Every structure is written in C-alpha cells, then in structure tokens.
Image (cartoon, helix red, strand yellow):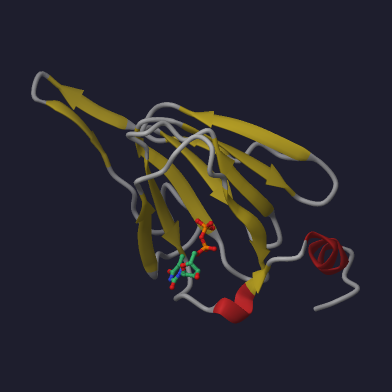
Length: 135
Ligand code: TYD
C-alpha cells in the first residue's frame, strides 16, 4: 500500500505553532464536512468500515492514536503522535482507529456530506467492492 502519511507544515515561533490546511493544496480534495472524535479510550476501537466515494483526512490534533488502513491487498499502520501528521484515507479503504490516548482529539476532514449509504460496514462486502464485483 502506498504511504498515506502527509507531513503538514508547522509554522512555529515563540508564541506557539500553527498548521494550515487549504483545499486542493495540502490535501487533494475540497472539504465539505469536518468532525472530531473525543472522549476516546484505548480499549474501544472505532472505524471498521470503508466508504464507496468519501475521501478523508485524519489528524490527531491532541494526544495520540493508531490508524490502520487496508486497501484489500495490503495493510499499513500509522502511529499519530503529532498534529503535523495527517493520514489521507481514500475511498474504498478499510480503516480502524485504536489505542487512543485519553486526551486524544481526532479530527476528520471529509469531501462529502454525511451519507450512511456510502458506508461499507461488512469486510467481505468491502473486498467485493475492491475487486469490482459490486459497484
Ligand atoms: P462512524 O462513522 O461509524 O464512526 P467511526 O468511524 O468513528 O467509528 O459514525 C458513528 C455514528 O455517527 C454513526 O451512527 C453515524 C453517525 N455520524 C453522523 O451522523 N454524521 C457524521 O458526519 C458521522 C461521521 C457519523
């Protein structure tokens, strides 16, 4: 699987740090939706689905966690410990998020509005979509 980790530019000075994300510059899509996960715990993993069309960017803006991406052929795990790390999650990529620190705030930028119909929550069905057996 290709590397989906993007290193965002930190603009830091004696007052602190700033990171900016602009449509089609740092990320290859236009943002239509932003959401964030918090009150997370290490023993409760999330995700376990793919999307038919949706593209997303994951950033652990505070704390740490792990993200597993699986394109149906290979898997890659990312340990997010710094807000300058962003993981690009393309459509038809199975994702699992886990090992959240108690202070983790997990930010997601997405290119589509929420649509439950876009979810693939069954792993066997995800593999069928990947092989083009379902579209
Ligand atoms: P889900 O995407 O399954 O969360 P995660 O991938 O983090 O485990 O979403 C959890 C619930 O929240 C599910 O019932 C759908 C709902 N939801 C919305 O209503 N709007 C949204 O933008 C998102 C992301 C989820």
